[in-house]
Image (tube, rainbow, N blue to C red; front, side, top):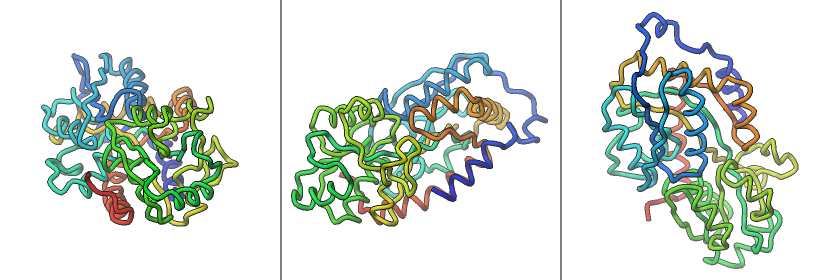
Length: 324
């Protein structure tokens, strides 16, 4: 994360569009644009898609409609976008789940993140926060590890789907701490969070944007961020990486177009996304929800995803996460 934070500082100050894009004829959409979210409504990715889409609709001059297509660890929505007409009117609000971890999790994946998509922009990094139901008698990560070791097989942790950051975080925690826990997969982070609140789960390592209201209401107890550094909103709470050296999992969100989308369309959408994510009001709002706003344009986003694929493949390998 320290290296990534240094990268983010430079990227947020990047020009709004590559010089060559400005030399092209301006792409002007004339009908609504769809942001396909591969998770259920209410989660981090859905929330980000709606915030960014609403902010971009004015500059683009058309409405941005969010459509949720869930299932198969977010790969159904991603496949739908990969096979959609490459005309600039259908984009994926993708994450590390379908765009980085999926190739390692799904041996028969019908698409490839680099071959079948054009990276448009990365808009946010979302550190996860591990949290437990208040009925779990622990207040620290160390106490949770001790409790889980004495209750093998009795701890269930939820996720937004197979290969999601929640899944990998839980599997990596179990691997590094030597715990026996059960993974429960959902179609998004929001339903997993609701089941934790209801007491049907004991643990969830979810993007903070999804669980912050519950933590503040006392319906969940935070144990630590899934990053090496402590979360800025919880500076007194040790991160999981401080307790378990080598532990680091952070999700992210970004826009992707089907491969073959006209360069002018990709450049225009990227420019507006970067401009929106550079606005102080938008950045403050996202930070208040627990995420880190970024403004990576096309080239930076493409490099970022190319680097993330082997990173998440290694996390999948180390954690032992697998299809169920």
